[in-house]
Length: 360
Image (cartoon, rainbow, N blue to C red; front, side, top):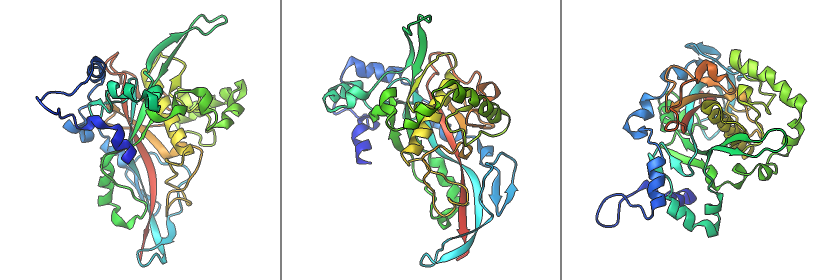
């Protein structure tokens, strides 16, 4: 985390002398003024969470509580390295939804609604342009450009994302505890920042990390996504159609560029989907359920769509439920943004995880 520490000088804003907020330029002041505060540490960390979304908890195949589950869950019994010198042991599979991470989907580079201020001053960002960081930072939001041909202009938008480890995940320790070797309950920490990823801002550069995108850049593949759109809304997303993001659009490319600006909730959700897909490709987001993932999380370069459910955390939280990847915003998301002021989002990533609770 040394690199992250170097990139987050604003986490402590104590001024060297004279008190007040430390800003070295008008640009820094503007960045702080336009970055929203989600009041995360003022109570929203827990008050905005959907507490009923932890259920159902499945113990040896028997669900406790009501709620959706993935289709290909693990067998109720398991064999994993045990507590005694890692000797293989029989065990019981326990599965549950856990709020593993938070996504900040923001228009302003380095803006953090969780912290309530930018992670980096614009003045520092500009000063690092010679080392590369300044050139990568890109402002998002609405953009209209010449599309050529019959269409004189095309609306688009761009978002950066920050991937945070959610501290509420520690609460799962009360149920699972140290018996689950793969459990990763941690304090609040930042795990990924798109501003330093050159593939996130450039579609052509992103192609080198997902060359299979060329296979799905055709009308037949795009039209096939209609089936996933229906399934995501009325049932469950179709995992094998990994190039589709349901009603939100096309999964490729794995960048923050979205070619429309008509629905902020849908755009932010699509960016979150692409971020999860990109993190899966980098082996940072792993498969956490199924027979191959009860002892330890397994690597799968394609996004496991039924592993995740999303919850709008800010600006207008979903406190009573969450939704599958690709589900229609008309079912869950209309009026969950505030025009202009509330078009930056925090989205909670609920992840279905299965653990092998060994007997010895």
